[in-house]
Length: 254
Ligand code: V07
Image 1 (spheres, protein in one colour):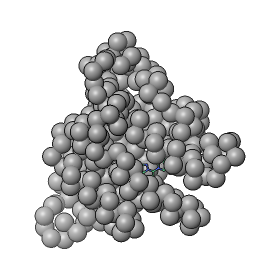
Image 2 (cartoon, rainbow, N blue to C red; image 1 turned 135 degrees about the vertical axis):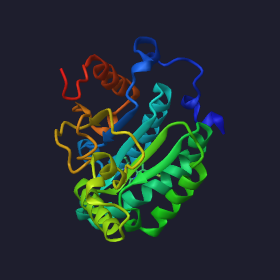
Image 3 (cartoon, protein in one colour; image 1 turned 45 degrees about the horizontal axis):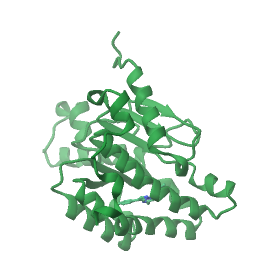
Image 4 (cartoon, rainbow, N blue to C red; image 1 turned 180 degrees about the vertical axis):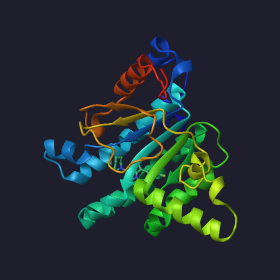
């Protein structure tokens, strides 16, 4: 069992632990895992081969996050806009969570990882929901890394949904207008209870947010790389963390 997940064990300090201040790693890292289709095309493979390769890179990235002692890793796996893709591609992608968990759930459990999701969970196919719900149940008491998948997620929808929830609570006199501030508003978002990302990484050279965590990224440091997601590695992750540590975070102050 543990031989299957050799990189998960924290026997030797990783390179990062040698040359970077572990007290200063971001608590919450969010990643837009872009470039899977392009990676496949460059290799003359079908797009889905890129998604499959990207799935295995998710596992390596989780291992790295555990090694780096990151507390929360939020991965943009499927957006509300991604339904517009060809049906066979969407169906393939929707089988990846089950595929992933079949291979990697035991290692995640062994390493105290908790799995959760943000987004419209009910809008996912039953076979996808069932596999993920099982993993959530199996890991709910773990207090190591929170591995948070954004699935069927769109940020404008999330914000509009929050407004509707607030208005319905107002109708029921559970909340009054003057109680609504930034902090109570945040409680109505999918990310209720988790801190805002300290660092956002986007791969494959695109420099936009694509409707990801618009509210939550207000003060987040952004880090972009031309590397395509299937080529992302612990080494590139480490570079992002080192760059993050060089930046002065000001939160609008001086
Ligand atoms: C997906 C692989 C990564 C690149 C981006 C798109 C394709 C892992 C999961 C997953 C989700 C939930 C869960 C366990 C694993 C996943 C989707 C797409 C929809 F509990 N990778 N991955 N889910 N891709």
